[in-house]
Image (cartoon, rainbow, N blue to C red):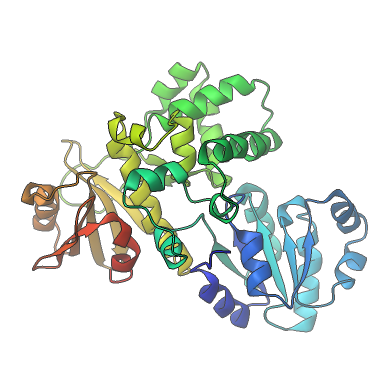
Amino acid sequence: MIKRNIEYELHQLLKEYPIVTILGPRQAGKTTLAKNALENYAYCNLEQPENREFAESDPKAFLKQFGSFVILDEIQRVPQLLSYIQVQVDENQMNGEFVLTGSHQLELNQAISQSLAGRTGILKLFPLTISELSHAQISFDRFEDYVFHGFLPRIYDHHQRPGQAYSNYYQTYVERDVRQLINLKNTLLFEKFIKLLAGRVGQLFNYNSLANDVGVDTKTIKNWLSILEASFIIFKLPPFFENYGKRVVKTPKYYFVDVGLLAFLLGIEKPEQISRDPLVGNIFENLIVMEYLKSRLNEGKISNLYFYRDSNGFGVDLILQNGRDITAIEIKSSSTYSERQFKNLNKLKQISANIKFCYLIYNAETRVFSDHKKAIHFDQVELFNKQS
């Protein structure tokens, strides 16, 4: 088992709250994290029909069988259980009593806000990071190999073939979860949608264009996107709205939470195809954006990630806001360094006095310059993110 960086934050929240809720995509390692970090806790999987039936028919007796200190897996399957958990933790006044896991934000957010407000700390566990793989003595020389293998723990723990693993993941989880959340009558239409979405990764998003290409209305596209986002399949990166004296775009970008799934949807069957793909820059950008996001989530922080683009087409790939301080990041798949790669970063620094760090993330050796400028090899993103 690969040790997760989020484990420290899990233990901290258990000291502070009666309940800790771990959210994240399926197969990201939520269950493994909870069971291995909390070996003295009882465990119950609510995906199992008999457990779910017991919890639904007699919630008080269901909870009583465990006493205190229990992990309830896939709690969104029995959301009404949260009200009974609330009563128990209010009576016991004890921190660390429950650990809940869930894979659907839409089904859980409202229930949690109604029943567990102020009683639960929330963590979001996404798939593995490059640094977690490195600590487990797993590394690749090329970013293409990280992309192709993806970051689902089972691929590494069970030595699964990535192509087959993501094909099964798509059919078993992505399609199944979508069917549960929407009245999906045409599976082929949705498959067309998600593959076209993969072809638009990291681009300014045009809802009308995608709707026309899929053959549905924009309302359906927005609904499907919200479902994928709530199921932790995709991540929406919003534009940065700070007023720099120019009109900024208001259109978001979308990335896939696991870049291995993106590679599968793009029809990539071996790592060597990635460097020749017309979307190689966007694929590399997806990898880096998610490394930044996972690093922040593993520390219990909110995203605070944006991109900047004005109406004239000038922009910077990634903005990390920390209070008033801003880290501006350019992402290039290039394997050679050039001062020109800092052009947009230098220009943005002239526009805003709040730019504290300027980073270039690329596919070559790390270089440290004056004025808080760094060119960083892609596998060191998490290290420098902690310094921002």
